[in-house]
Image (cartoon, rainbow, N blue to C red; front, side):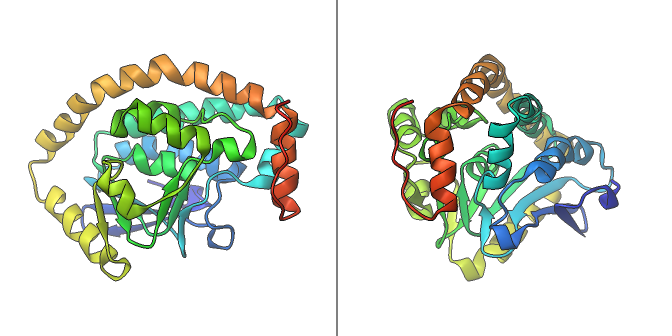
Length: 264
């Protein structure tokens, strides 16, 4: 891999383990246009990297990722054609995670919301700090959860719970996420690094091809589901991009107030 091609992501190798860090800590690793482009191709590059067998995805600072960047959202409102590129990249992010033969571990060091939650939940095994919160508040900014939330949440916790969380945008503590099966493990924040490292080493020491092909076998149904849902959910998200409620939510975020939705 040519790490120099990436500006919003940083990389660290430890033997056969490669750790990828979303690196906008001053913005709680909110995904802007540049990071979105890089996330759309990094797992393709990782798949072809001959020097790693296991991947860890995490965030710099005190958050995993707070989701989409508000300034970028305004750009997509002002330039509706920009959403076409975003939608294309959104599919690439999800499908490249599912197609990556190497196991990908989410190290959720802090809050994972919106696209941040989607990134974590499409990883193969998810460890979270006990201080982290997880949720998909797309609706809170007048958006449809089109970037993969509508695919993955029902598969992990069932349709009733998934629809409740996706329609309200409510966040939950990592302990609750573990209880209902949304994530695998919650550990004390001070132990997160060690626990994830131990698990990564366990996979790296295993039968590499058997582990990779087991992942790919388990992902077949999920890939079929993602292919059947993503185009429609992203199209609905594109529609919501042009609503008055979405603009109101963006305005409210900038003005540090609660949005007043009109249903338009």
